[in-house]
Image 1: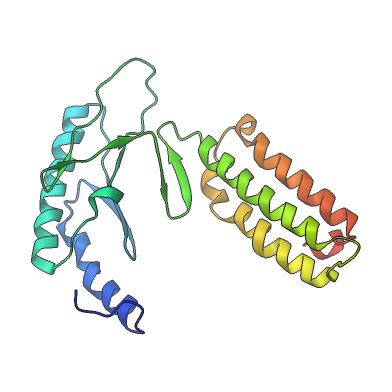
Image 2 (image 1 turned 60 degrees about the vertical axis):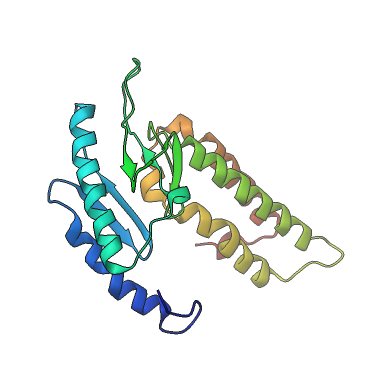
Length: 204
């Protein structure tokens, strides 16, 4: 509030001010904060217990926001229910400032797409699409008529493809092997592309 967007001190002042949000969380509820990306989570076998703890936490967060001049974005606030049950079961009902929090099947947090079964299939599909587009771009740049030099192509590969595959791999890497087929296809195509350019010895 009152800090010009884009100024040098904006991010620092925002970080200093928002850090106290974790003090509004009870010890039984876990939370994660990275700049303006914030989540709370609670684990239980009974949905009514989850609802009670999270709703109490949301009420405290709403009070904290009013006191400190913050406002949560209702359009960006969602609830993701991780559950391995295959039988029909109720979803949690939560309110933030009197507005129902929508329950979704997948959402992106810090660049990784989480789904309610933690299969990471949506993330791998998203990863495959982004890397395939970048790979097509590299193929254009590697055209024989205006071919870029190897060092430039390797730099672009590391920036546009390798970085995307590496980011979050410690998380989505826990998916079962058969769920990683799309990612493996991208890796094979990328390796074939590098082999064509004789860059394999430079990729380590």
